[in-house]
Each structure stands twice: as C-alpha cells, then as structure tokens.
Length: 402
Image (cartoon, rainbow, N blue to C red):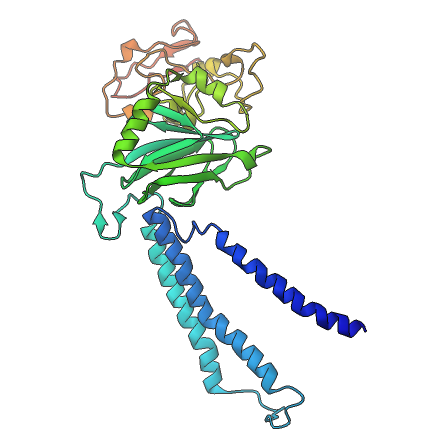
C-alpha cells in the first residue's frame, strides 16, 4: 500500500514543479540584459565563461548517465575488464580539453579585466561609438552614508539624496567614498559594483544607453539599515537631464558642511531630497575626514608628516585624535576637544591639500599659527634659511638642555 501511494505522489510532484516554471518568466534578468554598455560587456563575460565551462560539464553529466546505464548489472553484454587501468586517447581527452578551456578563460579574463577596469575612462559608449575629446564625462561624487546615498554634481552645482539622475549616452565618471563604514555602490543596469570606503576615493566609469527608471543599492552589509539602503536611478535624455538639474536648483536648500553633518547622522528610509547648491570642496573634505569645522584634513596631515612635521613647537597644537564621528555631537564639546585642529588660518589654504599647491609660490608672511606659541625667547629659534616655494616654516626647539 505504501509503495502504491508513493507511486501516485510522484506524478503530482512533477506536475506541481512544471506549474512553477512559468513563474520564472517574471525574474529580473537585469545583469544579462542591462541598459549600459559596460554592464552589457560584463554580462557577456558571464555568458562566455558559462558556455566554456558547459563544454566540460555537459559531456561529463551525459557520460555519467550513459555509463551507469550501459554497465548496469542487468546488461550482461557489457564488456567487463577489471584489470583495465590506462588509455592514452582517454587521458588526452581528459586533460587537453580542460587545459584549452582554462587557457580560453584566462585570455578572456585578462582582456576583460583591463578593458573593463572601473578606473579606466571609457573608450566607447556603445558598440561602434568611440568616445572623442568632445565627449566630456559627467562627474558625480557619491558618498555612502548611514543608511542612504548622497550624490553631488559639481558641474550642475546640485546634490541629491537617494536619487541618481544621469543623461543617456554620456560617459559617467563616479568618485565614490563613504562617511564611516565600508559600503558597495552597485547599479546592476549600469555597471559592476565597487566599494565605498571612508578616507579613500574609488572610481567608476560607466554609461547608460537606454532611458528609464532603474535601482541601485549597497551590496555590502553595513548595519541595521542596510536592507533599506537603496536609491532610484533615472536615465534621461540630455534635455530631460538639464530640466531636472534646473528644477533641482530651485529647491532652495544649500548643502554646506553644517547641513552635511546633520545629514550624515544615521537614518533609514530617507525620502528623495535635493539641494540647490553645494559648498565648494565638500566632497574632498568628506574624503579627507575633515567636514567638521576646524578639523585638520587628512591630506594636510600627511603632507606635514612628509616634510618632517611641524617641529617640537607644533606638538602644542596637536589635540586628542578621535575617529568616533558621533560621540561629541550634541554634548557641547568643541571640535578642538575631539581631534587634531587645522594649523593654518589663511582662507586660501584652509581645506587645500599641501600636495596640490606645491607648484604655487606661497607668501609665507601671510601664514599665522593657530594655537602655536609665538617664536622667540630663549627656548625657540626660527629657522633662517631661505625658504623654497611651498616649503613650510618650521619652529623647532633648539635648546640642547631641554
């Protein structure tokens, strides 16, 4: 009776499985059918790699079934050779074919890795459409926040939260960073994912070849609000993008450092928000961990270290360094109580990397120390050598008895 019931159940299971197959038609095949040329080339790599591997997988699976059927116990006509152990022809087939497939996969991987390098500017926007000198890429600065995305458009002077709008057919250059923990910027319809890391800048070059509405998200777990860290992607015509930018410029809000520090605080399911203007160099300050007023930028600190430091007198300007971005907020503590402060009060140099101004002649007379003791007295002497361009005047303790 039990055997009979099992026999009757088997067809029903097959029928149920067959009924579920049409539901696969609703799957989103965006990875293999994207809207951007870069993503399409990446999808082609997936298809090519799969087909090359199937050259081995399909024959092996077929031969496994054929051997099991041919050499079954009931087939007395099958040749039985218990002492057989070698066949040169079979060895050649077993090793030569996989070796050729590995060589092909290696060649495809080598070429694809270099052609689709996310840091490499695009050579084409579509098959047969080469990028020329007139095709200026649209720069978009991307910041991964807790748990939302900030997009800054330097050319248009606007910014958005959880909305990425780009023109169709124009090369895109993304500069990507994070405010705190590592995330992953991923728009499957446009290109592959690339990490967003605090204190670092990664790049991605891509293009959209179709207009439409798509979705982007973080592909790297970053905390409780990770599942809602998604943003809308709008690919528009060039005219439609200009209209969108003009509408954003009428939003009336300004994204300065104070507004950014409020936006940076953890929050989930943030609605789309637009800013009519953006403070200059905000993205560079975010990357260099100095969005807080008065905090020394990371690139300035490294440039000072590369020049040998600020001398012993400069130690008085060094305050407690803390990477806890949120601990002091709302406590009434000032910036100087939490981290190393800026040591220059020249407005032209505040926020500017020392490495970026090495080729400029700096008037050292305009530089004043912030929080440093005035040079002079028996314990301090100023270096009197003729200063070179972009060289910092160092104050050092020259008293051997100290």
